[in-house]
Structure formats: C-alpha cells, structure tokens
Length: 141
Image 1 (cartoon, rainbow, N blue to C red):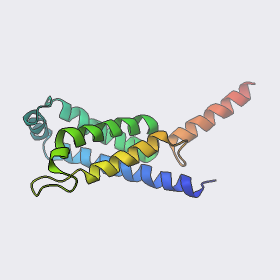
Image 2: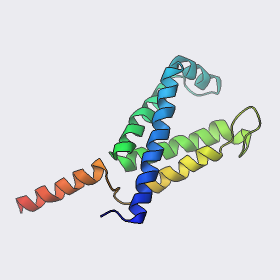
Image 3: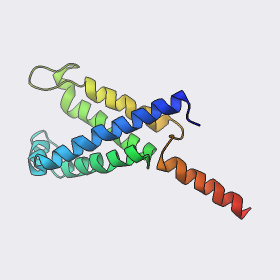
Image 4: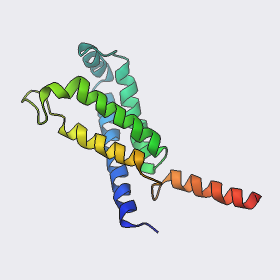
C-alpha cells in the first residue's frame, strides 16, 4: 500500500529523473563537443562533459524506473554541489542577467538529498528486487 509520503517520494523521484534525463539528452543533441569546450573554458576537463551527460541520461532513466535510486541520488547531489560552487555561485541566487542563478540547482540538490536519505521507494525496481530477495530467502529456509 502506498501512503502519502511514499506517493510524494514517487513524484519527486520521477520528476528528478525526467529533469536530469532531459538535460542529458539536450547536452548530446546540442553537440556534446560544444559542451566539452565550455567545460574546458571554465577550467574543468572537457571529457567530464561526456560523463556528466551520460550520468544525467542513465541516472535519469534509473530514477524514473526506481533502479539504484540512492546511488544516483547521491551522484546527482554531488553534481549539483559542483554546479553551484563551480558555475552558478558567482551569478547569485537568482542570477545576474547573463547567467541563471543557483536556485534551481538548489532545488534539485534538495530533491536528490531527500531521495538519498529516504527509505524504499514505492513502485520501483529497487523495491521489487528487494521483495524478490525476501521471497527467495523465505523459500530457502
């Protein structure tokens, strides 16, 4: 049975997954080499752009279906801390007219932390795997 808190977590997990998935796809569609060049211009290794985009696509899908929720939530939290500190902090909370602020990144960070700290996610592959493991353990006993 899914309670209100579980349902809220489900909404957060799927929303966060969609947001990261779309951001990852856009990085590839807009030219990942351009993104790698931008990473280099701000002092990050250009190859990191490929890893970030791949994490966003794969991790986004994983969150949507609820597979590795804690792992991907921690990785997304770290990604958001990096984005805030390295890129957005100088622009201010709401931005400076040339660059967006870090308020959206903070919201994604908070969502990621919530999912990393929350217990089992309803309607997820993680929960299904855990339930199967319990059933298999009970059959063995």
